[in-house]
Amino acid sequence: MKTEKVLLSQVKVNSANPRTITERKLALLVERLLSFPKMIEVRPVVVDEKMIALGGNMRLRAFSRIAQMPLDDIAKTLAGTKNYQRLSKAEQEALLAAWQSWLEKPTLQIVKASSLSEAEKKEFIIADNASFGEWDFDKLANEWDAEDLCSWGVDVWQPEKTTFSSGSPAAPAGDLTGEEDEDTFDPTGLPAELQGEDINPDDLPKIEGSNETAMERIIIVFPKSRAEEVAQLVGLPSIDKVVYNIDELLPSETAEEG
Image 1 (cartoon, rainbow, N blue to C red):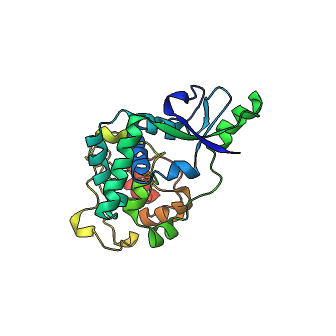
Image 2 (image 1 turned 180 degrees about the vertical axis):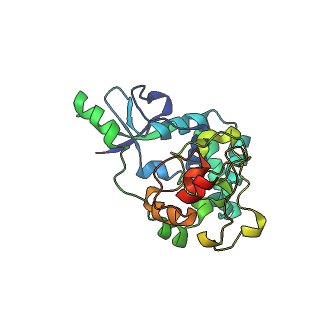
Image 3 (image 1 turned 30 degrees about the vertical axis):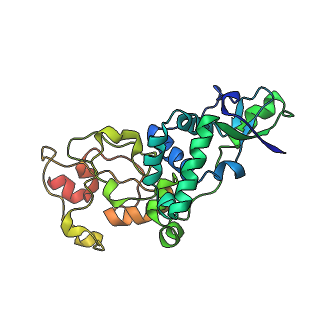
């Protein structure tokens, strides 16, 4: 299919699209498109014959956000991205000038999929967003920069984002960065004496006390592929439930004594 450039105002967000995006992820997508505009050339928005987006609704929203930004805000946003910081002064000026020109007449790179039936359109909306692969987190950690990955929208494990303050509500389990609960998030990380240390479960202090003992809530969020590692770290045979009673983590004989 042939790509073409059209006015941004001609393309409509698909109200039937079941995908959503958080404000944080939308801001990251805006940053990525601003600092890597060639992205839309290789991943254009797919539209039907009515110019309704079938694929690329989030990119469409990001471009709509950019179209409302003053040039000073675009310059400020770009200045905070690593892609922009790596450019020479001349390249930075050229990129900002390109966005200034774009703001005068916002456009979007699209591909028309007008030959699809209504049933095929519905299937495409889902299939375009379905992910069959999984990240190799060891490879990501060893071969990619974590800060880059986060700015590109990849959720990677961040030690400073795994604990919550005492009494705070439990974090949602669906996101490695905890972005769903940003307002109550407490990125305190590991205690200073444990930072940079390899922790052996046998060396951890034993938990003693009764149900009335004040306890701090610690949330550990991890990819399913690393469940065995996490289970070994906390000294459990498996991680398969939320524990509300601390006695459930103790050996049965200890629990009976408590």
